[in-house]
Image (cartoon, rainbow over all chains, first blue to last red; front, side, top):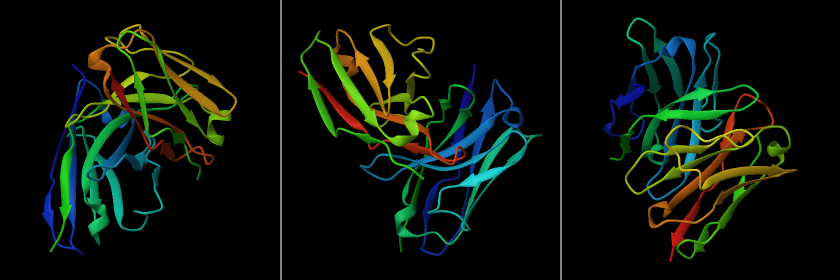
Amino acid sequence: EVQLVESGGGLVQPGGSLRLSCAASGFSVSSNYMSWVRQAPGKGLEWVSVIYSGGSTYYADFVKGRFTISRDNSKNTLYLQMNSLRAEDTAVYYCARDKRGTEDWFDPWGQGTLVTVSS
Amino acid sequence: SSELTQDPAVSVALGQTVRITCQGDSLRSYYASWYQQKPGQAPVLVIYGKNNRPSGIPDRFSGSSSGNTASLTITGAQAEDEADYYCNSRDSSGYHVVFGGGTKLTVL
């Protein structure tokens, strides 16, 4: 079964750091594009970052320079290192396999992990 | 980057047909994909590409596209279809992804 399981969320103070993990099963993280998507409480979905199978990375402007996407091929796990966190980064963070070609889609999605930035 | 625009809310009578639209310049270059999200749950892919349904998605869900507008149609809406629906596509850069603001579907 193809599955993603996120972990690492929690309460952090403004300016703090947190690392999210996304463990994959049923497929290889290193052979696929993988994205992080977030959703603030009561708001819509917002794309955060992608890592290509070749290792290239791209970020939404609002996290550029603060967040870093990476993966550990041996653990088949995707990561999101979040630094200099702000209150507006409070959200549920989802990881998803990001298929791109003549047709694009995100599937599967993880269950999400909640990040709360507050003092 | 670019934006995708969706109507915030749409309603449909049980068993009737509803169309949810998504507009944006990037849709002239890229197909949209569509996601259903129920309260407290992760999004689920329902339509991608020209008009493809993942395994397990009922055939009452279909997609289409014309110019800068993509549409998700539910033919014979059921009570369990009540949810938020989001479109997405790559943006004009081709590297980033953009989501529509979401449409809350109410089945009456």
